[in-house]
Amino acid sequence: MSGALPQGVTTRAALLARARHILLFAALGALGTLAHYAVLIGLVQGGLTGPVLGSTAGFLTGGLVNYQLSRRVIFRSSKGHVEAAGKFFTVAGLGLVINAALMALLTGPLGAPYLPAQILVTGLLVLWHYAGNAIWTFRESGRAAPPSS
Image (cartoon, rainbow, N blue to C red; front, side, top):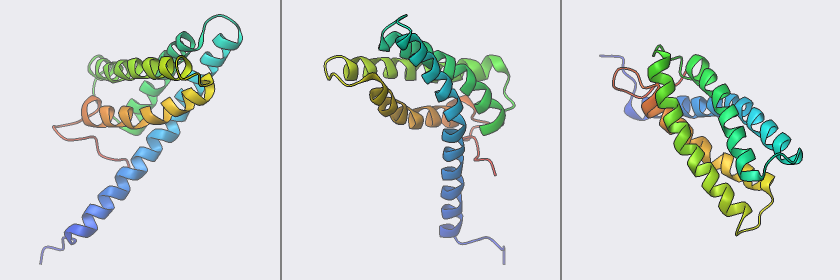
């Protein structure tokens, strides 16, 4: 007798572990989001820029915060900064393009207020960033980065 658990039990445990990992990613990502929104609101309310440029500047600020948290805490990566940061900011750069395009659409032709628009866009991008970073950026030894315990 091998002592292995039935397939359904291990799959369920793996799914729960992944869900907890995504929740950790989202919770710690809230710190980067807070930095993003602080820059966005400061620039727009200060009359320094419009919502699209303000959102872009905020997105970049939040990205720097989220890189450190993702690398050290969420994925516990041993990859060097050159490789990890390059991949992280490629995923983030694509997210930035998606963010700017959606903000332009929502606040332009659709006329949505910028903060509700940004909240919607942020929610959509959480899954994009998690998947990109788990599957590609912080992937170790040919497999997705394991959920933290």
